[in-house]
Image (tube, rainbow, N blue to C red; front, side):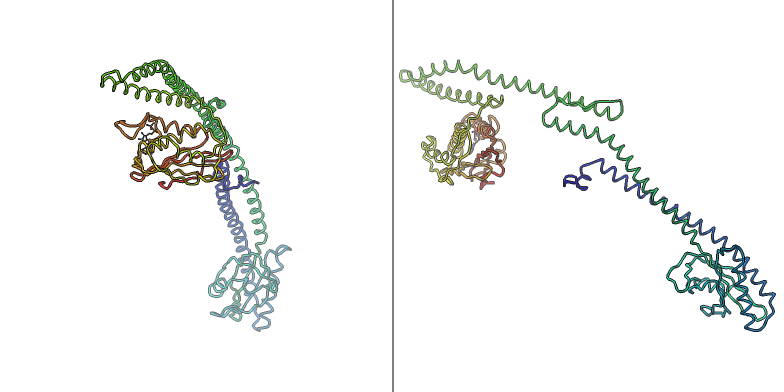
Length: 513
Ligand code: ADP
């Protein structure tokens, strides 16, 4: 049995197992209690029956013995004990051949004394056979008394359950008193009880197993459709919405299956509707961007003509021509970003993988025109050894250009730190600035489309740079993550997986984390 089938795991995961075990335990308790009560009442009944017979038989014996004693007239001690012994022998031999009892005669009784001397007995018993309380009652009060006990013949360790009935015999000629005890064996009752006990035990065990079997069959009827529903729900979760449950009959399970199928159908139609809507939207954005490209090219050409001729215009018109050119550039940038995003959305973006050395990418940052224009010093860390990973160099470059340009444009930093590192699963490259940083809520939104920290939107680009960078990273199966603290700066970490590797944990953890 494998570890996945261990009882603890089964208990946690299988409803059916819990139902069967629960039924097993509860039915064992119920059947055990019932059996115990039954055995108790049978045992009591057997013991009472035996006791009643014993008492009435003993009573007759006592009367006979007393009558025999009353008739005897000897006064000599020897003759008296002779008579008593004969009497015991008489009583022992009367009745059926297999005598159902044994006799013990003790005496003469002396008030206050413990055990009186044995006179005669049909079998020699250990003195514990007659309980002390019975001895006291017989000695001190006239009448017949009984008690349950265990008969233990002398010289053996064995004992058997017995009922002991005792009575006092008075010898009129001497005034002495003797105690006569009938020891009725209850071995037969005990074996009957053993038989009942065995039958009950076997029957009870069979019953418990039977009940557990029934619970297994019944719970299977309920659990099977639930398991089927679970499997189908898992397939829905995996995106396969075509599955349906088999509906049979009109019971609760059938109704559950029907509702389940209806739910799946409505989910499917909703998803189709949303998919269509989103496809329409994507197509719209892509169409608009494409449609705008041609007139924009014309506008750009006309703008260039105006821009070239600006020296001949009056200053206000010349300024307008300059503004026009700048805005047309921004417009073109926006259009190309939108086209890129719509390609991502349509799943049409393609990767062209090559071995890329991230250390080289980091060293290239120093040569980046934006950095050089700003005159920012760039510190490199880990870039002196090659860190090679399969990636699309165009996209990696685009991400880095965007991160570096953002740091230069927005952070007001006085230096940059570019770090490279790798582990078995992945390689990371990080761009860190020491500028104004971003607040917690801002870092959350930095990858949102069209989001810019500066609400007046007086500076910067389209707000699409980081979303595109993140899509570029995701296309590689990688991540682009940001850490930032106001007044301490911002760090973006790009992590790309190796073939068969994973981006968790990343090779660089930001100090700002
Ligand atoms: P844009 O194309 O406008 O540069 P991005 O998506 O690249 O848009 O960036 C979104 C916004 O995030 C920027 O407008 C800027 O406010 C903020 N931002 C990005 N990088 C940094 C940085 N290193 N320091 C401070 N703010 C930043």
